[in-house]
Image (tube, rainbow, N blue to C red; front, side, top):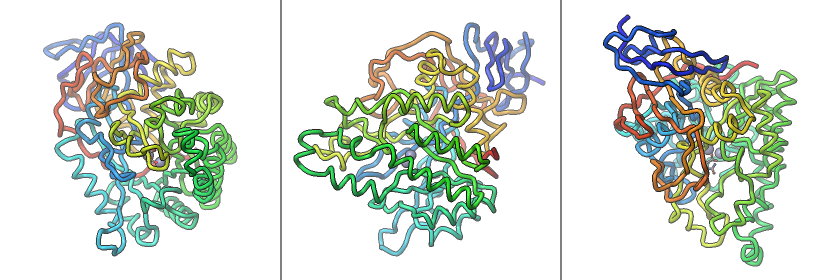
Length: 469
Ligand code: URP
Ligand code: ZN
Ligand code: ZN
């Protein structure tokens, strides 16, 4: 077998262990792994003193999302470049069917997928696919099977966002989970309890309180039970139907406990958290720029962070993603002192691995193998992409991230690829940025700089999803 490239002298890390080995690449695939592979005329990528990891999958990303009266500022061009700098080689976005402008129903699931395909085409640097959002159950329920056949076995329902026209009720969640069971597909849920949340928002939405507390009200109106009750309810429908459930962006200790108890009973529920919930807490809302950090669900307390890290250690929480939904300062300024009008979301793709590596691995909370599991291997398995993605194995796509074990840099949004003029981690010292990122055999980040061209990223068809526990 002729090798085009050899990654030489690095420590190859998988979810199972680590070994000093060379990785040989032929075309887009990993073709050989072994000690001192003969170089021949292959291009050598020197990885001495570095970890060689499977590329990261960020399975929760919103690029160019029309939301909160504006459109999120990272598109497939900047989002792909940002991800690549952080060693991300696959992203999964959410295709959302909107209400039709003529008022006659919603776009179909297939139209939503087409719309998101158009966003990616010609711009994507890394590989991508979408979860398909069910925003109008009665219209969309009979379209689900066709979408699975089209290569989209993951669906999403939101328990909030009535004003966006995206909300699903218990009936929709129950019925969709039944379909997931029958189709070997998986339902992702944004779990927040909307009716009580609406009541708490209304109670806090007074000019007196807004003057006094500003952006802190975002946290004050979303106590932990808002997420916990919703996870409890979604898990009950999962248990009743046997349909595979995946809780996105879980942020609370209580949610983690509910997931653990359900998993102990054999309920097929999987949990994801995001990097920001592991390292940021709601004290950020006190600052002058507090409103920049508003996202749904909002940042919680240090005790929640600790429980989420424990969940990652024990396997109760399987995935760390970002929920990337970037907005610039100008967009965030739309709030004008009213926290209910802040565009919700934060940038994250570029800093996912650096945050988890620095605070998880260097912070002594995770092994580097654990990190590979929660950033690459588990998401690939759960989302139906393994072993094409998430593995350093002969036959897998040559998607690799090469990182230095110690070298840290100071985060500065001015030097980043993310299309925002701020960063939640501005000034933080983070290790774990990719010195080299390889995507399907092509070097797209070299010496920490993006060198790959927009438009080379490919759509990834999938057949099934979920991980039977
Ligand atoms: O604040 C967030 N999370 N924005 C993106 C939409 C969502 O709920 O995932
Ligand atoms: Zn959400
Ligand atoms: Zn999201």
